Structure formats: C-alpha cells, structure tokens
Length: 174
Image 1 (cartoon, one colour):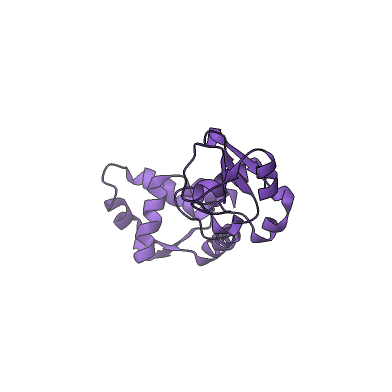
Image 2 (cartoon, rainbow, N blue to C red):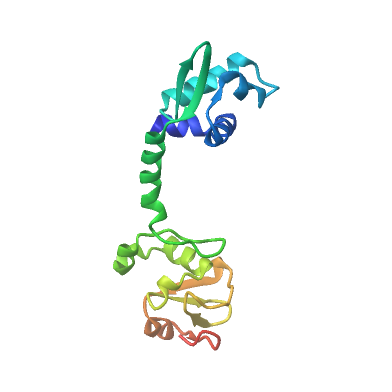
C-alpha cells in the first residue's frame, strides 16, 4: 500500500491515471499530454505506477500501452472505505469517528468535543455540553451559537454545567 501512496503523491502520475481512466493509451499518446516533459521522464512515471500496481503496461506490436489495473484500486477502495464509513462530515469541520465509539465516554476527548462543536454534529447531541466562559451560558453541540474555542469548557451533563455556574442557552434550550 505504501507504493500506491508514493505513486499517487506525484501530480503528474495522478494526471496519467486520469488519462488512462478514459481509455488505454500508448506511451507516446500519454507523453503528448505533457509537452514540457521528456519521454524518458514519462517512462519513469509509468514505471512507478506499474511497480505500485496501479497500471499494467503491455506490448502490442512495437507499441507499449498503459491501462489501469483494477486490483490496486480495489485495495485502495477497501482501505479508504473504513474511513468513509465512519460518517458523513458536516460542514467545514466535519469529524470522522466510528459511531461505535460514540457511546464510549473515553472517546469524548477535548479535541473530539471541540470538533463536534465546530461541525455542529448532531451525533453528539446530549453526550456533552458546551459552556461559554464569556457569556456564562451552556449549550448543546448543535447550537447555532459560535463561541471562540478558547472561551469554552466542556461538561458531560447539564447538571455539571449548572453546578459550574452556567445558565441554559435560550437558543438551543439544553
């Protein structure tokens, strides 16, 4: 898998994959899409892609053709699928977290709660409360209020927030 990521790290190689996604091309046709690069440089990129298993190079007469190799993309999709299945990110700060871990109190760390607050992730509603030091109120993670992260405290229950001297938000009514 490391070879795949190394191959994908180079923009030229990603462009080659985009070209080959349309149809198999011979090496000269691929090189024609990169006029600023020499043919040996294109061949080196193709070699890296082939060694990573992303493409197959085959000979037809005097020509060498490149085509995508499905197996490497299946492996990549399976690996990425673990992360994409964690949930749909909401907004600019969407958080990916295994839903099974949401019930675990240890999973609700400061960074997780901050991300949940910034993304207003409904999966965290009722799991913790946000207290704003500057206003003296506490809110639910889905509240439309946008406090600065440096001004917030997190509480596991609304009773803890009240005990800490905060009053309930009138917007989200926690």
